[in-house]
Length: 89
Image 1 (tube, one colour):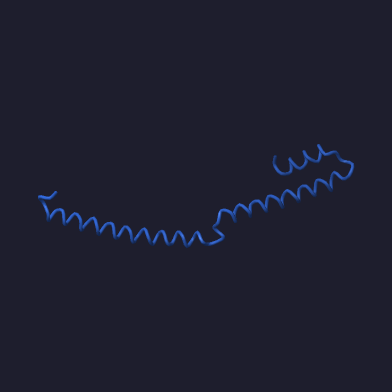
Image 2: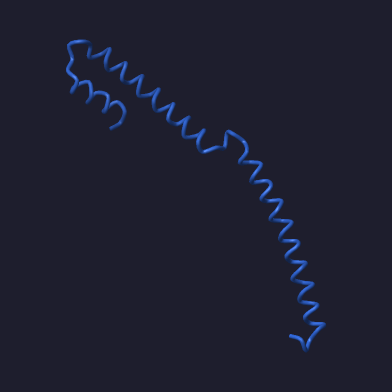
């Protein structure tokens, strides 16, 4: 393109302008994304821990109810099947 210096200059100006505006836009979006991800309540680890705590609590409640119902005289297989059925398995 050395034969068209004005065209080359114009293309470089347009390209530079587009890159600058795109860069500014992406930078602001990236900043917003990073800010949201710093919130501990959006962390996947926190969510997984919460789900695990709920599951554990539900399991403990069902297990206690089954053991209270079966008592000392019930066999382990019956208790296991009752827990499994109550948990939806």
